[in-house]
Image 1: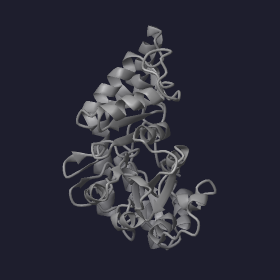
Image 2 (image 1 turned 90 degrees about the vertical axis):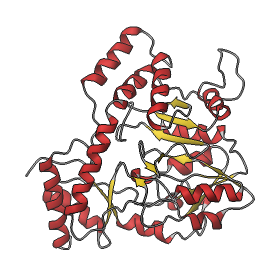
Image 3 (image 1 turned 180 degrees about the horizontal axis):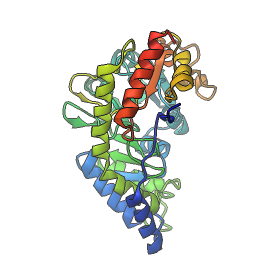
Length: 365
């Protein structure tokens, strides 16, 4: 059988290794000049110069972003249930309450009508996730937040370079978090970057990541150790020079799959949206799990299911959502499959993926 095609594949090259070695030789490996340079370069590259603060994980970025935006005990933040648990977890960790609402089926992102119905006097903000690399319904959500007097935040963990109407994600909310985990569209090995709408939130993020201090032993607030190391920042800086080309390749791979897959629902792209295809997610309405198993067993093609258990049914987060019914979320959890779309795929790999999917679908999985 042909070599296995993995659903995701981090790309770490000689330049990244050389950058790490350079930092190691310098002897300055904690939060230092590399982190500052990475923050400035990321800011200019992705978020139109908004202040960007590096942290040690995407989850830390969400948690600290919410705290910096003033979310705490008694506050509600509206979130999707169809996403990784870090989104709801981060709200809960502030002492606030994650309020799960349904998604709209095309983009797998928050349904603005469902959000509007869930706003209460306790609602502090709305936290959409730009899932799989497609921007959420930001036009409607931004207007709704303004109209109802609540904040808008962004979970852009999977959406580096995505945009809507020419405006990049990460520039809409009071803060936005980008993950730099190894399987994301770019990585720093591990880490996160938080863009801030203003200097006040940016300064609070800097305090919170560093034990509450800007100057040593001058602790202004109770904070965390969520700093990024210069080693990780050095990797991120190199990746920043490559991510645009990788995104173009992802988009080209997605276009090939769009044009050649048969019998499945390929991912639509909303008008005015730029999709960066962190995942290429199709729907398989009948026997999704059998389909995934057959791709692997019969064709050696990997596929991922993100996410089979919605957040509101996880043991950890279900107490926040007693008796909640989210039909589109449940349908997506039953039907979604993410096919390989990463930049390491060859044309031969893409041909194999298409042949495998079309064969399995044709055979009825």
